[in-house]
Image (cartoon, rainbow over all chains, first blue to last red; front, side, top):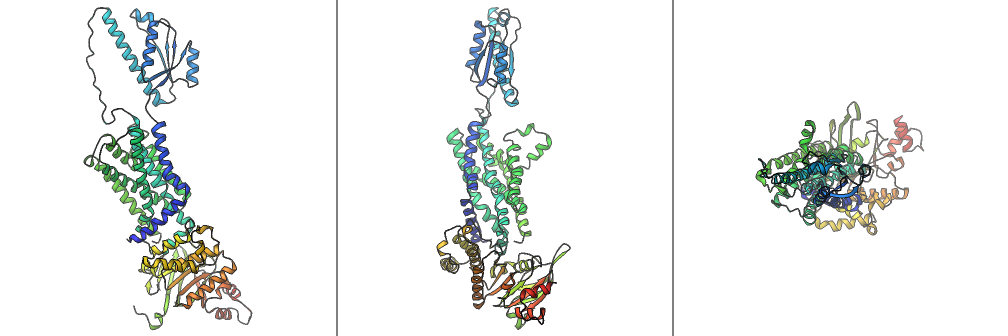
Length: 377
Length: 250
């Protein structure tokens, strides 16, 4: 293994990158764009639910209910309707995603301590959103009921009693329950895949397509030197992108990394090597940039996005898909990063994940080496 | 090694070299030798087995059976040494078109482990030889084929190899550039460098000191161009290599 050969190949590869606008764009613009996009636009938190209210009563009680609703940060009343048709229109046209209909007789029922009903309509086209807003409105009404009940007991001169079980809920690891805190590790994993796997899936195929592979093989270069030289520039770019993402997470979203910076660099390096060796392997097997690119999207990008616990929770997946998530590198990397970011975990807790990444990269590197040896290196 | 005195002057020795791809025999047990400092033409149609042979000799492909040595190194076991001792130029010129000539040259210098203190001198030598000094910062892809061909040749000579392999070096190059190219090849041979060249331009093959013609994996003729014409087309004084070639592969 000669460093001179590695240096010559790495330098050449760096020039290719510099002169290829598309690669540069993928390497630097896409990561920035992804962070901004996921960080700002794609928040999974539910706040300010657009709500429309049809108040058929217009009594003190109903107005009190509505103003309490308005005071909650979770609901925003966008329209007041006079009739049901207005409610239907508002939901149909997407101006509101939650509708509340206070029927006539509601106030009288409550005043008379009778059971009263209130209609709540949810827009279920986004099931995730509907589920969350449904539970928000339920707990809002439960609290409202508790007030009514206390009032009832007071009026009848009875002693208030406390509920027998009173849960003390504390959220650990992500105290504000901000989905951004979970999204940042996911975005970093995706960015690394784009830079280290999608971009490198082109680099060996390009040599085959341009006929330069024939010359490379006639030169005194070993398969290992060739691979390391090819991977080196992309390793540096991917690591830079990880650092940019961490810094942006901190500067824009205030997500501060709690645990060891060194451990973050170590695990990121391992994960980048897995992505690089996967990209290079695809490249030398397919020998065509077009096929390599499509294959890389299919076997690196999409699984990292969909099956890594990033967008969809693995625990809700069918058993077969759950098994597949176990062979996706991003699963382990996201696990490590959330451990570092949210749980302040260290090497002692995270080493099994690191070991999996190390094993994956060793196997892939060996496969790469064998494929190139077979090609005449 | 038990090389005889005669073999000491041989740059390449090929003995019963054979390459099969499954059922298909690309090279069928051929034997020949190339003397040091000669321009050796390896002539055949596309698919005749000449590229397979050249790739085996350069250490890119392992033979099925038989043996061969290139500057004394065994093509089965000493491919690393062979790759250090040869220059190879493929028919596509194999330069990086998005790199400048200067950057291409520097890449080869790095790979051939040329000591860095000699780089400046070798770079100027190639740029001068290829008359690319003025164009050294343009992208290689923008250069005309004639210049690219000279640059590829220059790159394959950077480490001063005793032997160079040129696989169809003049394909797609204009006639004037081809003339210049062959002048340069003769100059190299005069300096003692062995030139192994494949071509299917018969007028070019006439520039070679000695020729081996190959067809369907087998050698059909060998000797100097004049000898080949004479034996293939007896009694036809104005026959040329083209006539001989057609006669031989009938």
